[in-house]
Length: 439
Image (cartoon, rainbow, N blue to C red; front, side, top):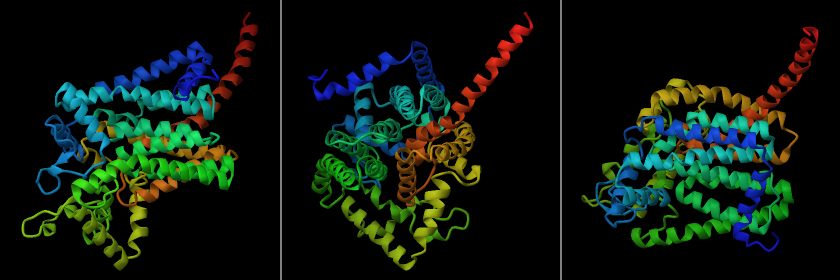
């Protein structure tokens, strides 16, 4: 084993782990994975809505040999930087291979649901014990907010398992240069799927500070950030060529103007809710000629910053409404359910998901409190939660929390599973006494 190539060592480690797992536990895990797959494929795939039509259009352009083309936002076909590249490429690949069918892509993505269950089990088993791991695997398998996106045309289908893999690599693990490089590459890939994923570095920095001390921990975090930047760099260069301007990943980082504008701020019913029509307003057209993606990004960011300078309290207000209320669904259920049809999600499935979430979240908080002496676990998770809230101040909602849902499930099960075991142990002597008395 000592001479094994580095590239296959993780596979060998996984094989050694599985060899040590009892057969009954593996069968239960397999059952949870099958259950997750069945839940996705039996849930009726919803009509395209929200960002779905954009990914469908870019996937269709792929089949024409026009990679990463779009007509968004002004109806002019062009080589686009509107979205991060990997999910359009994913859709385009399957459109080319299977034909341009949203349903077929949904069936392919349904195979990622069992992968999420497996990664959840793996992380829970390492952080806690087999009982917590199996409980978490089954809860994730039936928790709609963790699996409904696999049947939809959204990047969360890739971001959820990627995020779980990243958390598995750094949480409660001893850092090393090799781990830092691998982690940086994974986060770089995740950024090219979902640009908001940079909040993960907050958890990495805190975890490795605790594990290796401030100097080494921050140095290795910086190494991961550098590697992630190198992974993203070729796409940034491509954007500079096609858009004639600096766009690190996508125009999505100018989405702040959809939140920080007079219309959103003054809405009495939905304060600071993101408005798409502000982004593509006609006033951005000069003499009927649309701006390039780089020009559009620059203009939108300028308008957002101007609004914030004129209304400095808007940042705190948007943080409350988006980073807290909408992102964590600390609001009336009706508002959360109202998002579902606009995103192409099933209202019925989302209702079940929110019902489970309202039980799981307080259990997860209690589980985190119960583990409070484990600084290497609790502080990085708190850092992830805080960083996510800050990042999604720009645009909050249930969908954006999806990659962290399995972590919430693990923490909730870490509280409940031990109570179940203690109850079973208390019942056992009484059963034996009853058997003796009746003999």
